[in-house]
View 1: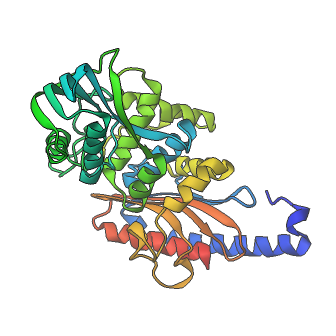
View 2: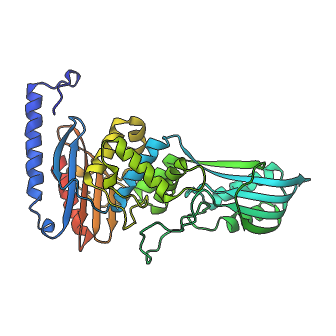
View 3: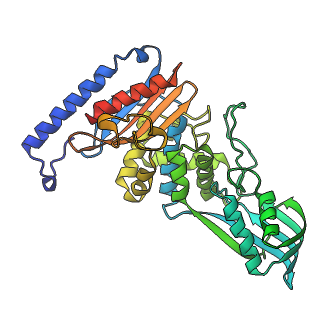
Length: 386
């Protein structure tokens, strides 16, 4: 329902102008429902006016479909809601044993927090920090603590023939090479190593050498703008870890997502969340759910202010850089794209010509050419923005 906020200057003429825009937008969208594409494919779609708090358009909005990378909206909003915008990813270096005269006779533990942002330069900093701590030689073991998450290297329902990154709690440059790179960097820093490699859980009573933190915003930026699947899975497991004091499992993250769905007034039984990136064939959502999550972000500025800057911008950057490069949508549509075989999706925000902020979700499925889905979505956005 249109709300007459005096401070916004909404009078009778404003209400008439709004309803005129609303009728025009609905007519344009209804006209798109005759697109030939929809005769042989599935569509789930919803558009919501955040300014007036009402549905602008809905078509099959409760039809369950695969989300592709629009799943990253579910992951990011759940993470910001559950963990908060100040949450940090932590990787620690600790030791147990005797440190005498610069020589550690014992074990150096590398405790993974599934930080996908770590680079060789970061591990050079790790090595320099270890030396500055006073460790100039190690005689013993270097132990990798990978117990932050389960032992699954790939997500449930991922295609076996996809070339995906391994889901490892200790990464460098997105590769499972943490130990070898750190050892090289330590030797380059002048640390003598007479060690064997092992895996295990950090025991009580260890001394912390360093604790490295990466911000959730750093992860969100790459995850959303570039649709990085590894970054999304790392966030999925941060959600899981918040629910599990021991090793995090995908089911822990799914449970947290379902609890948010319930809090938003929808039935969590209607959805399945098998991973955080949308690669899984087992995840199913609806356009209604995506819109409800976007509304939740809009209503909570601590979520929206961290989510919105990470969304690709039409014709400007990210996965929308080469879409909607001209006209009213360019620089206006801020949305997450999604593409897997047969599926194309889009969900996000835009501003209508009357100044109202809209959120929307468009899920196209059963596509022979995913480009057809993108073309349809671009037409929808133009109909909303013109």
